[in-house]
Each structure stands twice: as C-alpha cells, then as structure tokens.
Length: 142
Image (cartoon, rainbow, N blue to C red):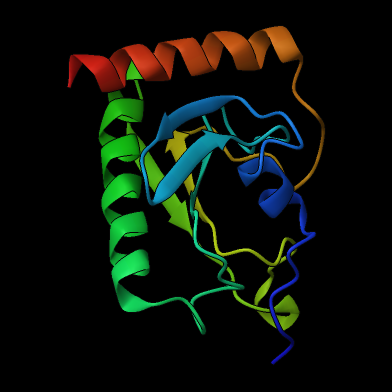
C-alpha cells in the first residue's frame, strides 16, 4: 500500500491552507461540507491524524471518526428534514477512494430522491454557507 501523502487536499484543509465549509471540529476530527455534494448537507468527517484510509488508521482515531459521523448524521436528519442517512467510506483506488486521507461521507437522504453522481457539479458557495449554518445550528441544539 502506498504511504500517506501529506500534500493531499484534505491535509491542506486540516492545516488551514485551503478553505472549507466547516461544521464541526474537535481535537481529533474535522467535519465539513463536500463542495460537490451528492445531496444537500453531504458532509465529510475525517481524523486530524494522518491516515490514508481504514487500512492504516489507529483504531481509536477510527472510533472517534465514527462517533463524530453519528453526531453529524443525527443533526443532519433535523437540519435537512431527511428521511434517512447514507454513510460511505472508500479505501484505495480499487475501492473507490479518490482523496487519500481517511474520510467518511454522511449524506442526508429524502425518500424517492436519488443521489447525484459522484463529483457531478460544484455547489454554489452561498448554498454551502447556508447548509453549513443549518447543520451547525442543529448540532448546537443537540
């Protein structure tokens, strides 16, 4: 397996070198909106520790990412009046991974509405800003 690349796009976001629509952060994880969402509120949750994917992440970091993903999922149900949540996680190119820093997709879903194809189109910044605001409000409300 190739080694972790500290210059991947998510590592740059973690270092503050690139912007994101942050919705959650603690000492071990960061969650932000996907700029090419498959559905409104599509959020990425990743560990701050350098981990290429599930194959090399320390178990405690993986557990924390899962806990944060659950927190985001619960808030997204409220914020986006979702009927369900899709959680996805891909490993290595053959497994569908595109950015090689472990991340979990948390995607709010509405019954009868299919997801957009992966990386179909960038969402407008003002839409992402409003979605981030709604999700952060739902997180704050608990």
